[in-house]
Length: 237
Image (tube, rainbow, N blue to C red; front, side, top):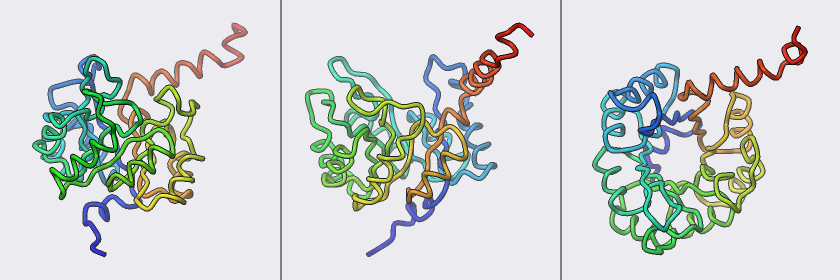
């Protein structure tokens, strides 16, 4: 079997998610390209990026493999990660090697099922590596059967029906690694190096970390909350 060189490039490494929406103080002006460059300098082997402009600028700045998405909301559907072919085309035009999309059981715009959408994308762009962001094992199995090249735990804990917890869903990661026939990428609520190491111990193909590295406001908040919760401070000492 031919080994995909992009997959080999990201195997066993850290992918850093560099994303900023318009409401984020880090949005715009090439900031995410600089963030991605810093991540590369720190040893990241890939970047996850949102939107045509950031995908393109990050690719040009780092030359690392990019997992591309476009977040866009449509009325009547909760799916916002690369929900239609419009967003798929933007990701491809931006130069991403890997296309990620929501592959949960939630209906896409126009009532399309994720499995059908995956098949459509693979038929239209057979050379594109497709990564399915799922929240449960059944969704992961469905995505793999529909033709996804990679399954990621990105949505675990972010759908109403999936298990909600503070950290990564190691149980889900472990089962996917054991039972799915495609590479499994761990993503979602990985907040420290120990979490990432645990994911690799379970056999995950690669690990994606976002907020714990690239969102200063959230990093700051963890410090502030820990300081405020200290018993000496609570006691006024």
